[in-house]
Image 1: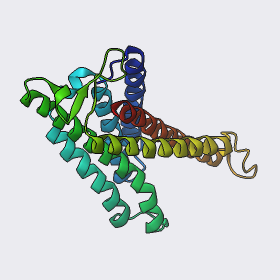
Image 2: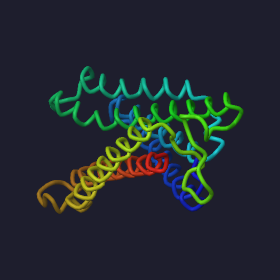
Image 3: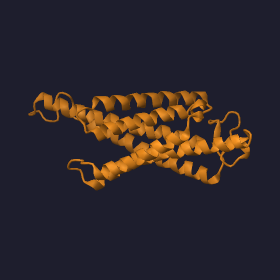
Image 4: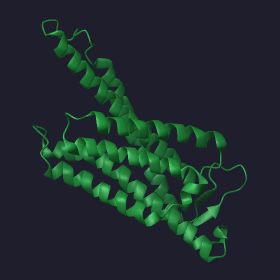
Amino acid sequence: MIAATGLRWILTLLFCVLAAHGVWRALAARSHPWSTRLAHGLHAVMALAMFAMAWSWGMDLPAPPQVLFFSAAAVWFVVAALALPGGPEPRGRALAEALPHALMTGAMAWMAAAMSSGMSMGAAGGGQAHDMPGMDMSAPGALATMTLGGTGDRWSAGLLALLLLALALGWLAKGFDTGRTAPRATGDADRTAPRATGDAASGGAAHAAWDLGCHGLMALGMAVMFAVMV
């Protein structure tokens, strides 16, 4: 999908690192609820799907399973925030934190459906995708091999790109703040606390900062993918 070689490899490296982080967090966070580990796993699958979409062979992958999977994941994030026990955190706050993840997975479903629609219309027209309203063949030197042809699809992709960019900036800023204000491993946040307590607090804050940063980078990579489709 990405025609520019440098951008394609940058996004490939980014999404592969994010997928590895998601798998690691899903397997390593054994003390966390199963819903948290599942969320990390879903982010890993999202990163792998975005990695595939950056390459031309990714457009040949079956779209209906992807649309179904990511649509179900979007619904799950919302249902989990409302129905599953979340400790002392209010349901409203849990829902507010879950909605960005639901937006990301929903955007994945939309992208898979849009790419599938454009490819199917191009095939129906004998490969002349540039004459079809779904997707247009890009000119030489363009960032993407195909772009959305319909005005409504272009507006939708542009809006999703802006929303994902806003999420990326918010997550990255919060991640930097969380890491900057986290207590150090020596327990300097509380000199009277045992060292083990300080180390645990530092480790938890570090994981939170990395998670926020990875969410931000995922949203940023997705925003770039949507932007080049417009």
